[in-house]
Image 1: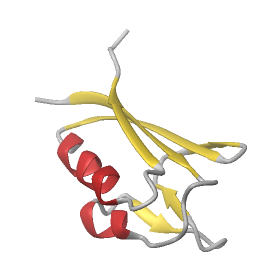
Image 2: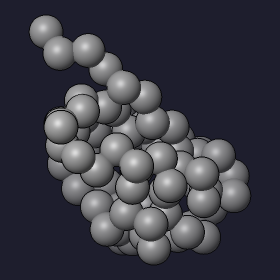
Image 3: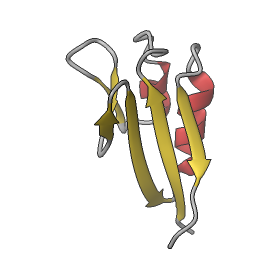
Length: 79
């Protein structure tokens, strides 16, 4: 069953360890040496993306693996 959730990355906290890449292949290395997220929107030093699929656990694993706690994942309600 698909779950709607938001992934947020604090780019000020991200230090380019890339532990998230191993847990969720939607995360990629950006040109600036930090992380980027497929389908994300950048607002200042924050990336945000909303997904509705069955990959919530992968996103949560990526967030848990981040040594700087730069990634947050939260479920959002559908309109």
